[in-house]
Amino acid sequence: MAKDVHVEKVVEIPEGVEVEIEGNKVTVRGPKGELARELPVPKGVILRREDGKVVVETYFANAHKRAMVGTLAAHIKNMIVGVTKGYRYKLKIIYSHFPINLKIEGDKLIISNFLGERAPRIAKILPGVKVTIDKKNNDVIVEGIDIEKVGQTAANIELATKIKDKDRRKFMDGIYIYEKGVAE
Image (cartoon, rainbow, N blue to C red):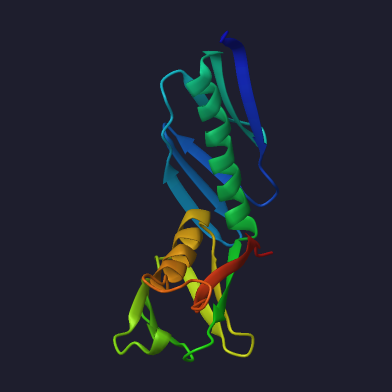
């Protein structure tokens, strides 16, 4: 495949958001907090700030560099959305056999009485992520400004109730992600 002469992605910086770029480290500050991240910028890809926007570009790009330009721009955009609006995942608690009991202890979500098991199952909550249990709607709400930490915490909770060695059609008990997006 032929090389593109110039590949460029532009990410607009909204009002009230500050973006600093020092080498591969990008720091974004906004009304909800601050995110700093070391990005894997390959040789030949340029990351720079320019009056109210971040420009990610490269010249004579092969497929890898072209993909990295889009990836780096998406990471920066996710950081900006995180510090302005935040992210929220909703998980539904579903049980038909035994009522599942949940409680938060420090950086862990303790899931007890899952399928009548005596030993509780534990899901790790990553730092900077807030987990709330809505008993009325049987929901677990995971919120934060870092999309990767919020998503990983939701996945940890879902994986903690994964059922093995049983018929999935009969034993549908568990905690499942049913909505994810921007918190606003």
